[in-house]
Length: 385
Image (cartoon, rainbow, N blue to C red; front, side, top):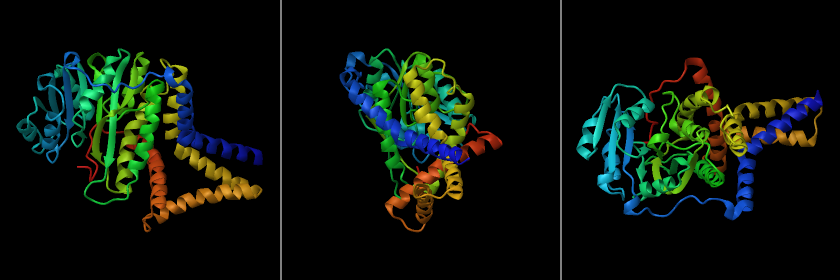
């Protein structure tokens, strides 16, 4: 029995280490080895003759506080106005979002019943005239050249989906959310995935697809996770373009971030368990490893941490040793640091709290989905507008 619990502990610890750090290190080494054989992510500026017609779609639910700023930002993009169609899809808005969007210069404002973000985007796509469909959140601000840089990706006929880089910034309220630190690491991993093949997830703040690559998905399954792997299954690439920059406010507190991630994970688990991600059909070997390493194992970390803790306790009870007492102490210290962060606002403690709550949100999202399903509608996270 002792050997079994030891094996369970080390297996769980190894899988946690691989998904959180080892996978990124392996990608960095592989990218270094392959070197010049890697096709670089496009960064050149497009010329006037090659510019496609683009439809920029913003799905909005009660976004009157930010929609005018969003439209001003869209109209200020370094892109010919005659080639840019701006569509605001109002998802059951009960405020002045639609009126303010028209006043601010949107080419088309759709006033829809409450159907959820995905169906609002689908409705906008049906009316869109662009060769390229670009998408953004109402509270997101793009750099002036972001659209041009993002569209460079489609010079490669193999690319069907491209997402840019969103930088999370603190709002007016000083907070303790460490999402920015995590997101910078996530973007570095995503850049390596993109260099070596295709990314395993995108983001909803800044992304685009070819019109023919757009897909109708289940309304509870967001584009940012479902599109990349489905694009790969179609034989195209899904890439990350770090030069296409956007900014968005993060939740001001880690508690707010937990609630946001919990909601996101209630939309993620349907994609993982019944949306096709688990099926390897259409994946190459490298992409299969990426999906397992960066997605499936990451989402399994709550169970892996619990297994590591219980197995470690069992080993210590059966046969205490300095090694297993040390590994148990490390796990207890992580939980203690996360608890202390609620009263002592030191950066290492806040990082520990962020990690613990972010990991817990994966399990909480699964519980929510299993218990009562997931609504296609959404509400803005507090403090992000």
